[in-house]
Length: 217
Image 1: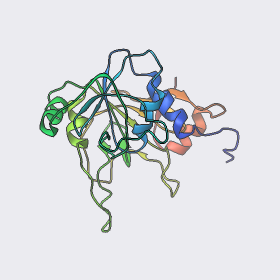
Image 2: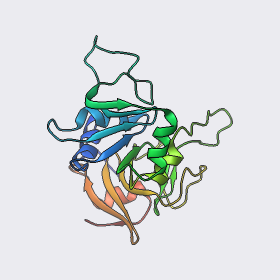
Image 3: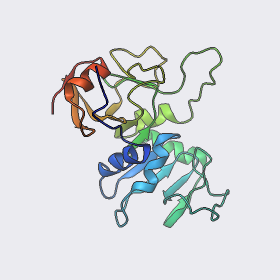
Image 4: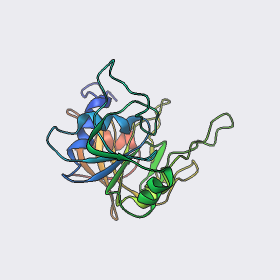
């Protein structure tokens, strides 16, 4: 089967696709890894309030080269900017915001997502892997919506969308949307609904690559 007729979205295109679905006024946490790229894709003039679990509200896009301030970082220790009205607070207050249902959306990376929206993103179970929970469990359960941003296939070419997660769960049935380098899928009670896919990719090919039943657009 030839898959050469389509081109995967770049990481920046994936981030822009996520940004497109964030409504005006939303309070959004961006997880470590791919999700941090979303900050640079929020359209100018759209008010989105970015939260970071290390105690920042009102983050702006990444600073230009040479203007980094390493006292001003996100949870992934990357330099960020602060928009007018932005503020800092204690780590415990940050987690209270996450757990208290005050975030509209969190965008997280993942190792696996199941068809029912179970999320596995903190540990692969490999003996040499360093588990990294961070705030993932609090975010996945606390945010009103959890968006996952990940590559569609693992490095070995296996689908990261599975019938059942084989890795330890971060949280069950918490994911509402999956954004990959091939498609955007909504997790619904009926199954995974295809919302968008890269140009030149058919739903049949996406279905073959995913290995799970997909509901057509």
